[in-house]
Length: 384
Image (cartoon, rainbow, N blue to C red; front, side, top):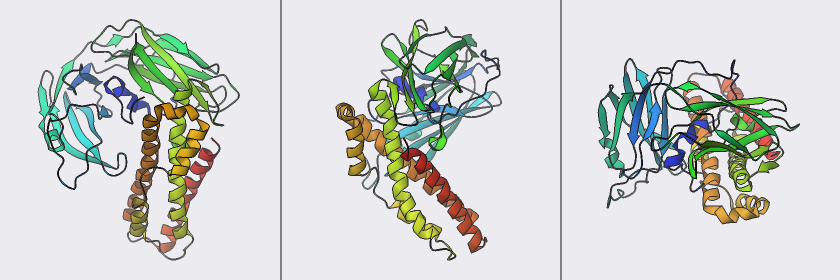
């Protein structure tokens, strides 16, 4: 995978990062789809991306693969945006589209809302607010489609420890239902999969459980609905490929580069947590004094972005062939590290707000409990 951001053909992949297993009652999904869709024109040279609308929760995508304004110059002192985020929800019979940009020194440090547009069936809106960030205006249209049942794909399974079952799914945009069973005696940490239409990659994802918990226990099941939409071509001959299965002990089956992609997340998170916990423990050990949460946030925020040279060296020692695709791995290592930093800072900011008027002992207990949670997360990562 090239770069830390999904390309146009991989836009949908981001919906599946960090997804947790679902307990389904049936192989055949019977939920009634809305039939309402928005179409987002991200690049003049590529077909638009389509997003099915729901009244229950926002759906969308984020990407850096988007047309830029030629000869636009970044204002002095400003940081370039990392990606544009589109999220839409059905409100009544209209689509409410929220557009934001990711920015900051760290990956996805800030998610800045820049526009909210409401459009009805057959209507089009232009996101001109993006021009301020050097991005060409994006056209978004809402329309109805007839619910469909996608063709069941051919499955290519590069793992010996996953049994796959595929079923059709009634949905607004073509999709199918996949049930993956762990037939091994080991805990599965992550699965790397993608769909293709011929040689064209449509969707790619690395499902993994939150806080590095096992994704699938021995004899356990992971279930997911897989998008099969392809606006610029036929839906025939779609292939679902299980590229790699990575176990909790760090071993893997399948494609080495795919396994290295996941392991880069492990290294990045582990490095970030090690540095963060070193700072947090000094404040926990100072109890019963009241911890200065604002000062603590500043110290974590001031840490050098990305991972240490030692961690990168250790990773390349484990995966010597990773040097062949090092730019992609560098990006993943940094993204994983930055995401942990951003999450911890977000939790501490919430703690700072909730601590107003609370006793010193209460604040110390909450901080200590959070440090224990992070320590458990790091211990799980250290075993991988």
